[in-house]
Each structure stands twice: as C-alpha cells, then as structure tokens.
Length: 145
Image (cartoon, rainbow, N blue to C red; front, side):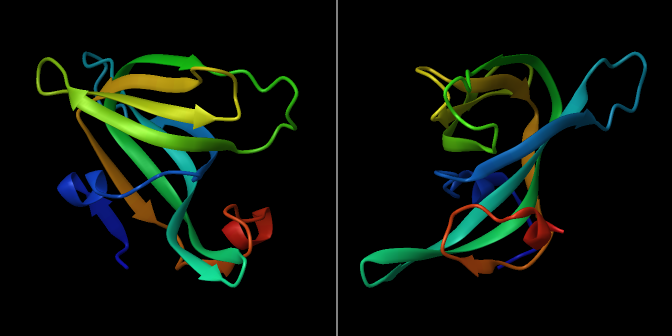
C-alpha cells in the first residue's frame, strides 16, 4: 500500500461502498482563476476478506482531492435514513473540454439517481493512516483520527 495515489493507478481503484464523511473546498490560489479543489474525507476499502459466512475489511481514512473543480451539482436525499456517512456506489469519469474531466460520484441509499457531479482537472488520493481491519466498511470516529 502507498501513501498517495493518482493518475491511472487511482482510476483502477474501486470506490464501491466507501464512505464519504464530508467534503470541502480549498486550494484556490488566484483571484483571477475562480476554481478551488473539491476535497472529500472518505474511508477507502483496500481489501474485502471473506471470513466464513461474513467479511472483514481493510479500511483507511483518506483524502480524495479533485483539482480545480467547478460546475458542482449534488443530488441526494437522506429522508428515511439516519444522518451518517454517504456511501459511494461508483465513480464515473469522462473527458470534458479544456483538459478537464467530468466526474460523477454515484451514491447508494440516498434516493434514486443520487449523485455528486462536477468537472475537475485531475484526482489524487492521500492515505492518512494504514488500513485497519474491521467487521464493517466504515470506521468509527476514534479510529479515523
């Protein structure tokens, strides 16, 4: 396992069932360039291990950064569910204009068609802590520190 992922290596990674704990904006460096980074705080599942009739998961708290993001649209509804981390179904990426990519983060358990979409130049992920083996796909707050 590495501390940092980007490019083709990141594109091959699966984000299914990874939890999103929050997102923020940051990294704007120029008043004349109105783009900031879109930053997600996630639990990334590095390994699914079958243990008899159940699974255990190697999970790490990670920071997923989309550089120079814009055109953000969020569509999800948590009615009927406890307010908890959002779950990623998958991340789609396609080419856009001017060297950018269109990203769509499809969400599960947040209503039909739930997603967060935007455009950005590239994506990078930093692993903040080595994987912790857990019976669940999501780490509790104490383990994410």
